[in-house]
Image (tube, rainbow, N blue to C red; front, side, top):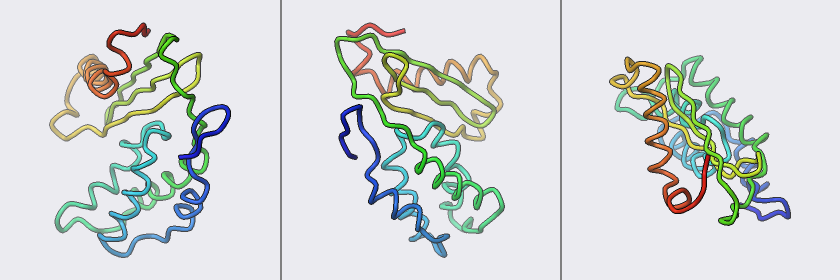
Length: 158
């Protein structure tokens, strides 16, 4: 990560490495790509949902490039290249928490003054997918508080 006057941005050298990353030919290559992109997941809205077809390939006997997996690979590269500069948090300011849920995942954004500090997302398991929209939204809130409780407890947030 690079500290910039306005916040934190992804390291340009790492972004260049991700942009040039060839389509992995084996599990080792896929794990390497997911490890590198996963390090920057807080910069990417819906990372867990975008990466889901790739993480599915990590299962035993599931390494096979489908159209969805190729699209996910390219989408992660694009998302990283267009990742926003994340605002540095200020414990004296009010935090904003925005959560969302869809059929395949849940996500959230922690921010201040209308600018993102970090993103969080998680693909839903097949067991959680049948939940109602209300239950998925509730799950998004629970996961968000679990993830960012050190910033939220004792501080004002909306």
